[in-house]
Picture 1: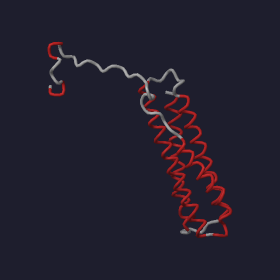
Picture 2: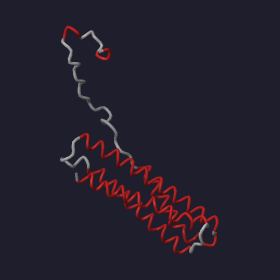
Picture 3: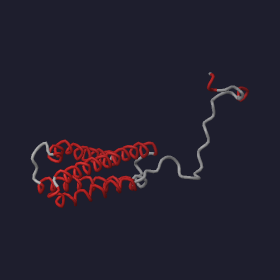
Picture 4: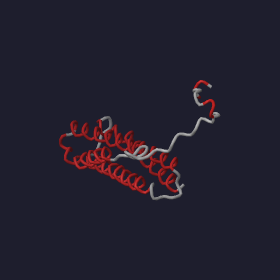
Length: 163
């Protein structure tokens, strides 16, 4: 339960960072007048949140195998959710990087102010590509034998799919 609760908070943290795009977009696109320093600070805060969330997701994924309270199905489920959250981090980083690039194109005098945030978003997005979640058994692992069909031995020639 602990891993799932931690994951829920991380998912909401990523979701909150993604929602910030709707706040920063009008300023980044020039629809609203923007102060380059304030926007750069906002972008850096969002980038730091995404970076922290990704680090926490990696730590959570690394600790799943050590958690003896989780069954194999629970681990697969949590890993699937972690993969989804990592994908959301990647999309958020890409969205914000696009906003920063647009802002820099529209405001070349303020481009130096937002460059560190752009670099951080690019780093976060690159780190998500390096993050892999193992799926299924390891290469060369022995699989458990399939359950028998439950048919009597004299009916072994009957295809259970036709029943």
